[in-house]
Length: 343
Image (cartoon, rainbow, N blue to C red; front, side, top):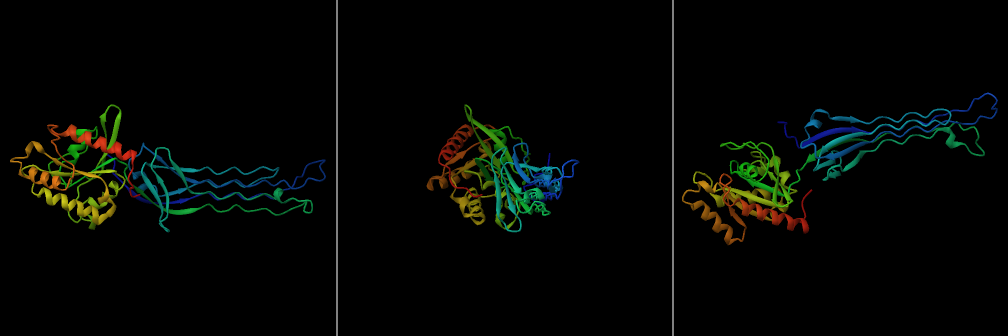
């Protein structure tokens, strides 16, 4: 299994334009040859292109320098120099490209095949043929090619998903995504089993589908860098619907209401806009709820605040169909009236 890398820094350099040529025709029986210096070729550009074939920026961690080909110098007989070849850098869909020095957002690639010229190649210089006039029939001027752009870039990957699962470690997020999609995340009975975000496609009716993301567990203080939550919170910035996953089993140690309030606080501390997103609460591990005291406490809390609540068991699939139907309906509604999301 490849390492998940969602942020890298690379240096890109476009090719310089080729110099124009200074040349004159020297042919037998042609007494007045005149200038015939060709133009230099343009330098190659650096292009970033999104593809669904990639899900991580891992390759760019090991190759940090990209340089496009220079344009060739022009030649005699009005021969123009060849244009330099472009360099194309494939990145996962959802990659944002920033100029590291100015912090300017250069590209936000959200569709498969979408591309952007990130460093433009230099322009080829003009040969002396271009400078010939009625009063200057023997021009010796020519232009050098211009340099290509060079940039230090920061690439940030933010997963594109319709629904984001947010919850404490071992709350049942991985089990839930495995139950509703073909995703097969690592599942174990200890905290922080999920070390990287996981994506799954859920088919909820006919041909209608939505993408769900399992974000590694949050803990109190995640916005300050504690645990793994802060590292991956950026991946829920593009989701349109949040599901707070709460463990309601009899052996859970955290109070369910406190867990929900802490998660909401962590999202607010990280980015106020996240708490404005539509959200619902899912109580997991219904099959081991015991006396059901934790379930009732969380259910009443949500009812008082008119928060959509679902109690499910991924193991027995109890309540799962209703939860999937709700997610699908909300996603379809939000697609028709999209809410603003942070980029």
